[in-house]
Image (tube, rainbow, N blue to C red; front, side, top):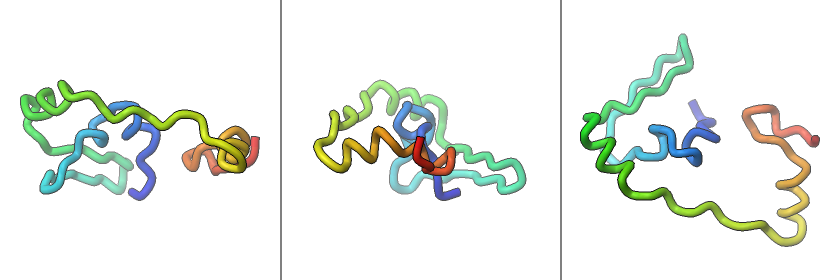
Length: 77
């Protein structure tokens, strides 16, 4: 379970994990569950996520434009 995007940046449960939280990983199904009380999770969600960085200059912009997500193989489009 090393690749967790885009859920983390899209505000899924992984985005709200904090130090000390327990998670349950089911290797057979590929599920990762955050074991936090629903009330606490709602409290965390009341705080907005950090903004994503804007467009990148130069070579990083070309890379971002041409390479797909790691979830789809990070291949050139």
